[in-house]
Image (cartoon, rainbow, N blue to C red; front, side):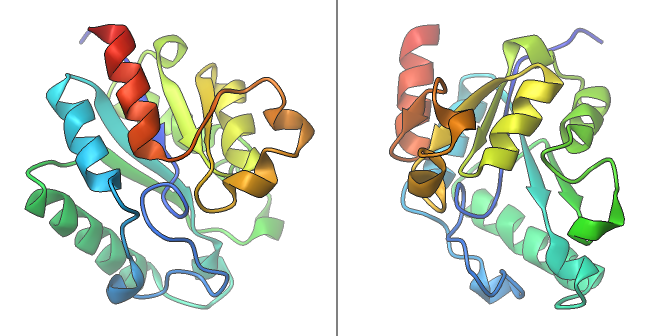
Length: 182
């Protein structure tokens, strides 16, 4: 199967509102304005789209793997209501101290998505609002993109973000990407 370019997305702060208390239930998953439509436009333009998200709330005992599955079921439902979908959702449920290979800034989630979908990482983008998202993209060989939603405005001040393109939101990045690719 030939490799294809993809847009890999962090979840909280990129697709939906972030929460200092974690998104623990399906009802707490509140899409950011324009994010679901942006995903639809990417899919219509032929991009693979996958979500790569740290979900340490599971490892911290704040919610279960079943709760996380229900939250992602809700995300898929919301996307379906916008006549779209994602090609995969990859989540690291581990506690930050567990030392796993999948927790961003390590590239494990992105590499897993690349193997399973299959993705041409060199032609792909990792869109995030935190330094760990950008670092994971760089380590996986993607082009990192910062959005200023979620933690993005604070992240823009970090050294890792100095030379990385930034956009106000996911929809603005998608507008730019699709204009370049037409």
